[in-house]
Every structure is written in C-alpha cells, then in structure tokens.
Image (cartoon, rainbow, N blue to C red):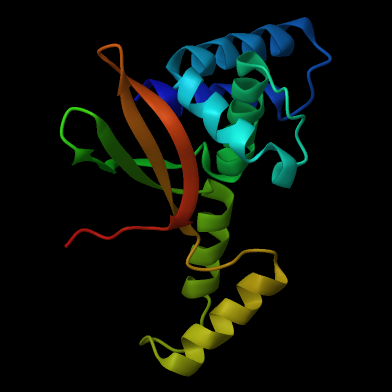
Length: 177
C-alpha cells in the first residue's frame, strides 16, 4: 500500500536527522508522495473547522493543512513503520465506492524482541495471570506497553475517481475472527 511505504520512508529518512542531503531528499520525496495521496480539500475543510481548537490559524491554506496532517501521520506511526504485518492488511468499504477504511497491524521489531525475551525468561512454563502480570510490569519498566502490536487505521475517500487518505489513526491491533 503506497501510503504505508511513504510513511515508512518519511520516518526512516528523518529518524537520524535531516542534516545530510540524502536524508533530506528522501524525506522530501516521501512527503511529496504522501501529499499526492491525501484528500486535500477534505483535510483542508476539517482542519479549518477545527483550527481554533488545534491552535492553527483561521486562514489556514490547503497546502498548510495537508502538510500539518501528513506530518502528524508520520509521527503517529513512527514507532511501528518497520513492523507492518502485511498479512493483517484489510480494507472495508464504509460507503460503497465513496469511503473505505484500511487497517493493518504493526509492531516495533525491537519491542517485539524484548517482549519475546521476557516471555522466554518467564519462570512459569504455562501462561498464568500472575506470570502475565509480571511480564507486563517488566515490559513497562523497559518502556514497552504490551501487547506491543498496534492497529493502524487509514480512512480513505474517493476523490475524482481515486482513493485518497482522509485520516490516519492508531489503536489496538485487530485479530482475525
């Protein structure tokens, strides 16, 4: 999915700073791709109507609104961009041929490794509430909030015959039913 690739590329290019020309060029390319995938007019209207509560200028331009939105999207998923679980990718139409929601689970590979180490080192061979609670407490002390997998939700809208990103959010992972 192009938006996931662009989000990953933007985050990875900025993760060590944008002082090197190659990093800056990669970041600008990723942001250009995100702009091309954004539902510009709709994002502009949403942010204009919420400008005061968000601390944005009332005369916010469409370009500034999209820049604000896509920079937020990159920040929202930054911790998870190296751990998209492509097998969990799903899309459902909310309003046929008008609005849809794409969803993918993701985890931070470093967090996943530490959680696995905690689970492997757990004193109880079988899972139990006290053992699970102890693993959770150890993980939290390390700065990891179990279960470690998050769900990325991408709201899409059909604009001029093409699907565009309207909004992006993060929440609990979805499990196959």
